[in-house]
Amino acid sequence: MPMIPVASRRRFAPAFTRPPALLATTSVAALLLGAPVQAGQMFNTPQMTVTNPAGNVTTSIVITGTTVMGSVTNAGTIAPGKAVAAPGFVVTAALAIINSSVGGGVSNAGAIAAISANGGAQGIIIDAAIITGGIANTGKITASGSGFVTGISIEPGTVAGGISNGGTITVTSMNGHADGFFVSGSVTGGIVNNGVITSTNSTAQAFGIRIGASTSSSFEHGIFSGGIANSGTITATGKTGTGIAILGASTVSGGVSNTGVINVSGAQTANGIRAR
Image 1 (cartoon, rainbow, N blue to C red):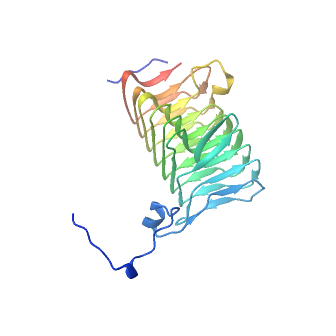
Image 2: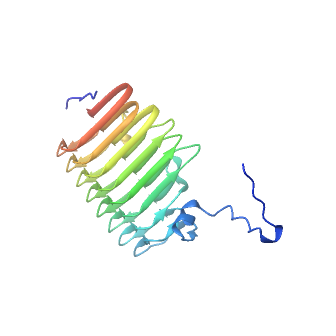
Image 3: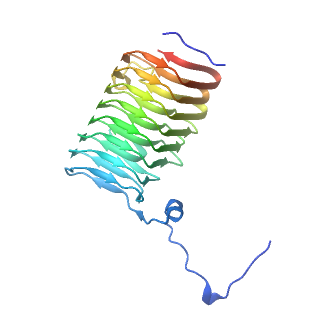
């Protein structure tokens, strides 16, 4: 597959009227939404479904070592995430599914944000998990950190039903890779983007959609059936910026198509679509 380059005043109040200080755990999101913040939710026993409803604010949702018979859905707000131990590494994640299976898919129609001041951050992470029914985002996913930052990450895992984005995914890294999507597992149903993906990294690589890595490790390879299709907008800005990348020994049956817009820029190199 060819590579496509792209070009004062102070006011005092009497002591008896002074309001009590806000609790340190009060979040800005809760103040703005008028909703109480729910502590992070952990699920390690079988569930029928896992749902964060509209209007609800929680700091994180972590599903580990168990089974969800139905769907995992978010229509509320999940932020700012928590440190999660996935096999081989620790990362700040908002919605994490680790060593588990989900039978009715994963969807976000609300807001998900993962924020880390000194490490990696992932909006949604699927690690050593099996998802049947696909993954769909029609809401907003943001992730920012100083390490490896992704919007939706499958590493490794199995997803049947594809991955789609009809909302917005915005990722910013100060050091490691910045990926809108990162996949090093197996996906049937392909990837479809008809929304907006924006990846920014001033010191390293930025990818809109990245399949696998430039390494000989089988852990870093993606296997796709159903292809990759973009009819939305992908913007990748970094030391190197790439819209869609298929790296290492990753395979994609169904091809790669673009009928939308891919904007890339890089201090060193920039590619719209890159293979290997």
